[in-house]
Amino acid sequence: MSRSERLLDLIQTMRRYRRPVSGKVLAEETGISIRTLYRDIATLQAQGAHIEGEPGLGYILRPGFMLPPLMFTEDEIEALVLGSRWVAKQPDNRLSTAARDALNKIAAVLPDDLRDSVDASALLVGPSQPSIDANIDLAAVRKAIRTERKLDISYRDKSNSEIEPPCLALCAGIF
Figure: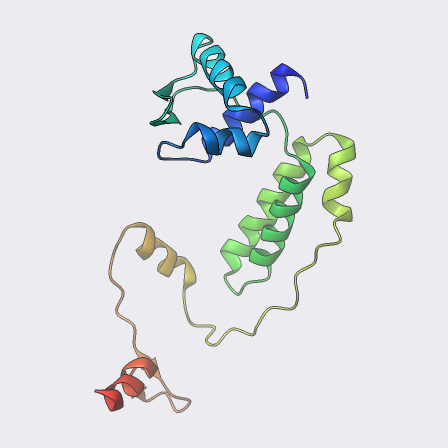
């Protein structure tokens, strides 16, 4: 691995952490010695990377260092393909369409050899479970979660009579 590849790999590894991470962990994840790690961190700091920390305390890459990832690895592409395929099979139509669109956008910017691996991926997702109730607006549920709002949910049986939520009915007998 060249030095530039090693430095980019270190930046990518640090991007995964939101809290300070020890030099030992970073060295193990990137497959370098702790001494090399200290030199690489000093090099990146000299190049303008906002890396805070010091030996013994840990390091963190602060936001603002705008070096975009250069390309996905084959493993990253497989993860994206598998995740997108799983989401695309879920009953939330808007989210499944968004997953397919996102995967198409990613494939469009990949080099030809990697683009072929998107279509040729042998990782498949099994059939999805049928939706319990087609009247549930999953987009509204996602919006409530994002905006930290409460939802008023009622449960109904097959004859459309309102019933106790299943957990409350089961838990009521326990207490």
